[in-house]
Image (cartoon, rainbow, N blue to C red; front, side, top):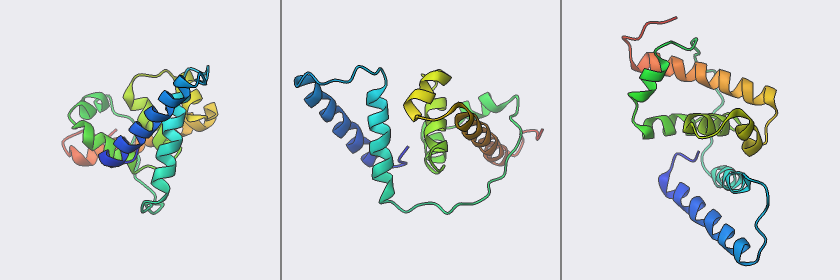
Length: 143
């Protein structure tokens, strides 16, 4: 979410330290995804001090049947950098979606989004990613 592995490591360490302190004090929340939400809020807070991308219109393409194979050709860092440039809440939705570890209800819970917002963020983000993939892989057929 941050686009900077050093900052991500700092957020990770701080979040785990907070969890350890809460565990020692017997104050761990009962919610299953509180740690993810805590990390997300810390990432958002850390990114406030960074340069913010200008809002701009991005090209969009319909999702291609080859999208999955195009994404597999990317280095994980390429996808992470692309996602980290998205505005929030789209960045959170895309990061959780492409982690491929959470179902939609879990993403809704962690990202604290309404279903309509999550749907819009994912649909628009995936179409924008498809346009970027098509531009990157110029041999890909356009739909």
